Amino acid sequence: MKGKSLIVAVLFISSAIVFSGCDRLKNKYNQNESFENFKKLFIESVWKNNPDWALVMGNHEYDERLEIPSKENRIRKTDVYKSLSDSLKKYDWKKITPENTVDARIMMNFLEEYNWKIYELKSFEWNPAEYNVSEGFDLILGNRNMSLEKKLVIISERLRHVPEYYIVAKANIRKPTIEHTDLAILQNSGALLLFEKNIPDSLEISDLSDNEKSELTNHLTQAKSSILEYIIFLKKIKASISKESGLSRSFRIGKTLYEKKFKFEMQSCFSTDEIYTKAIDHKKEIHSNMLNLAKQLWPKYFSNTVMPEGLESVKKLIDTLSYSHCVADSLLSEVKKQIPELTNFILQKKLFELKNFNPLEVRETPLYMRGSGAGASINAPGPYDKNAKTFYNVTPLYDYTDAEAESYLREYNYWTLQILNIHEAIPGHYLQLCYANQVDDLIKSVFQNNAMIEGWAVYAEKMMMEEGYGNNEPEMLLMYNKWHLRSTLNAILDYSVHCLNMSETEAKKMLTEEGFQTNAEANGKWKRVTLTQVQLSSYFSGYTEIYSLREEKKKEAGKDFSLYDFHNQFLSYGSIPVKYIWELMVK
Ligand code: ZN
Ligand code: ZN
Image (tube, rainbow, N blue to C red):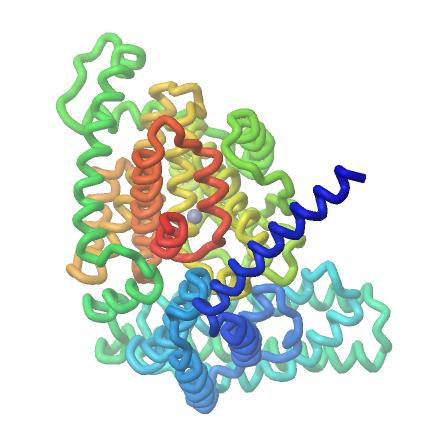
């Protein structure tokens, strides 16, 4: 009896303390509750106005709607966003919690970025590859939480809008770049397979009525011919562009647009110029690490030859080590084999807490996603179907000539293929996105920051080496440094090409001579820098921020520093800009 009343007394006291604590917080953050409600309205409005994005993020409320990229649609969206921005400004950001202040800044960035894209960047005019309907259809067809019949009814409805979509797309295009025109032709041609094979095949095995089947087949035929017409339209543009130079524009966006795009996309604590300078310095540091490793390795591989001066020795060693690679046909199975090995390593070393991983499927990259120059990528489920599969896409080498395939396989050799898997899967993208899916805040899970995501994967590679993955073998470390050099050179390349007018020859010379890249890699990278802007800088930019934060935390904690705790806390905020994680962690 005595014991029991004591417990009651303790409970009473502690709840009283909690209550008064709450009350004080309530005064300080008196607008917080209303802000939480506003966040819900904000997200609902974003989905209503971006049905395709909703679908990608796993919200299936608007599956049958296809957003028509018309001028009217852009104007309507600008109006909606203006009123959202007005409401957001009415809140006193000091009277909401620090977590919500971060959300408010992320939301404002999103609204301002849209305006900038519509009125200044205007890629809807010059990038014909923005128009491709296949992803939505593929996602609906692949949804495992819906019956095939229901999916096909949705697909049928959605298909009805495809002709209008491509009419509007054609009307939007004005002075496109040659590079994006080529990509659009390639990817829209790849899209046809979905409408010629995947959807008809599913239709055949479904239990839809004959009427429904014939209606869908009609819609399919119309959609297919719209895509074909779009491809023909682009091919005509392509032909006229090559005759008259004034009809196309350069893929280089120039410094003014580049800086703005960097600001909106990265939300970094560094400027474009700072990142460029840091990348140049980092390149020198990596080269010096590589020279040290080359000294250790040289006698083992070239005992009878004098070691050449400078980077030449590094190049020779990389060339020799790159001969260890798998055959083209076993690329996919090699990747599959390494996933459990990496999982064991991070569990054994106690680097992460996470135990509930989403299912991961290693597969060949779908056709409509190929052609952008990336050999591997991750498709993670959105915040609305957190338990769905993550896909690890590996592009097969069927279309490569023998020489191209050899060059590619030397790039993804015995050592670097392991680093690729660290980057894409464990503990890189796949693991980070598993953590992000556990965040219970829609703003933070919806507005993902690419610099944080790519920076994390680059950080993961470095951290794994520091923790002794690959037994600190100098071969592994040399190849790691070569790999790490890649993200650094990506940043230099991106800035130099878009802001400093670097030529194709200069770019490829830098990538092959200073980055030790194969021709296949350098060609792919050149293609990417002509098709994207800022994206190639996200790796180095995000990595630099994350590593600086970790080193600061390490210094602060001294011998009490725990990598396990740092990782779990850092990843617990989701894929938000590193500067906000920094603020929230330091607080
Ligand atoms: Zn070979
Ligand atoms: Zn990545």
